[in-house]
Length: 433
Image (cartoon, rainbow, N blue to C red; front, side, top):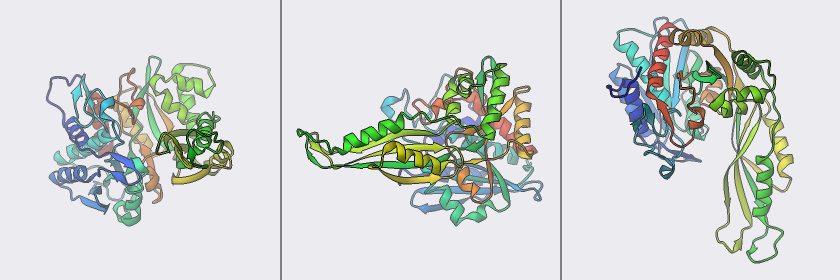
């Protein structure tokens, strides 16, 4: 189905509108804020007959929730959640204005097109389609759109679950982003269903030295000391460690490739553009993401700092921090800026069966494989309430599209056809589960 030249489906228009709200989040409390996007969603939910609540614990950091009554109130409620903030976009690097919501080449372009205003739009329009048809979902749905996810939910989901746990009364499961999308293994398609997330540890490395003139022989240089630590950590090749989820994923990839290959990295390589995401699920990663030092060209500073994004397999956080201490050396200070849990939930049960079945009805005969996501979502916060979180933003994608590379990347975009497909699958799931 081609949507080029036709009237835009509502899911595309809503995603486009959401992209046009600049909800940039630099982290550390510096953000444009989600208020206007949250008010837009609240107005939309009111128009389909719901009663949204807005919660703004910090000025402009707005969260919105609405509850949809289902046909069977005896069944546990299902949370559908998204986040409204996006990471920064440097406009000079992009082919389009990152906040214009431009449609080009059959795709919707803009910051948030895949992370995750596409899923926000799918949630809204799926629920709207059901309600406008005079129907109800099978069970109660709790729709929540959080602030601050791109900062680990510190000023968003974590405050919501602490101050408004009643929003989630009766819920046992949740679905959100970064799962349900298709990958290609050779000439075969499969869908990845996210059933776990690595732990998140954002650390700051700090080196101290002696200030002085830039022309001196100066061995006690904080910048040099920090650079050596950052290089050592960034170049560390962390070993492969498999979990129950990644073992099942690799077996599925092996079957798809009709291969006897056993090397995990080689199997990850069979997924084409998705390889980067898949390989990161097999090991700890420690990526340097920021450097700060100095204030003049000819002044040696007495301190230098670096930001490191650490993602560990669930349950290995303390072990990884001990390894990082060994790698960077005792003279480097390590400050934990944000730390959040890793988790795995079973690739089994009625919700998993329903998600797999919904994909099967939309794309018959295509297998669904579990995976452990290298990043994180607001499912981490909900886990504190005993809610099992899955990633299910279903998208059928072109085999050659580097979809996973769009997350936090330049020229982020999503095919219009994939949005329509995803909304159809999600609506089917909500009607039947």
